[in-house]
Image (cartoon, rainbow, N blue to C red; front, side):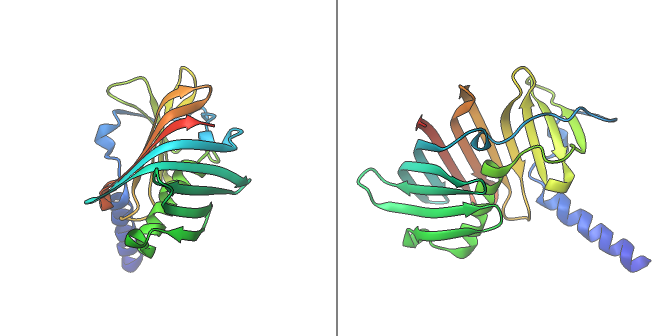
Length: 211
């Protein structure tokens, strides 16, 4: 019994250490049964292909150029990122549980980094309301409602006026915490997407050029 209690405490500590969102930032916590919000990643709503002006900053490195995200099946996307003169940084197929790197620019071709990047894209591309939220928060400022999905390790910000998704925060371990902001929706798709991974000091910005 003592060993089981110790294990539960360890798991609770690990889970809370991985959580990128401090509950004190979420405002008041509402108990009870909450209506299931209907939301999903904008990449799951009839999306086929998008062209983005893109910048990626990782510690002291900065890459800029153009990227294309293309839906290749119901469970996969292709991400290509190159600079303005055509030099490729990334050419990756992204699946729910894995990825295939066809090409990665050598200075950033690191398995640990690519695994974290895959997790970031998993949160962005594949998240949806596949289960009932565990908790609901009302932030101290702003109009969004925040839903916390413990089983998915996911926090979701929803604008109740139009049911649009404005922010995602997801994680699976201490190193792959991802905070994703989706801004300025036009015809159901955000004009700007920013992925921040504070543990590795990475910021990836995607500004929509067309889709």
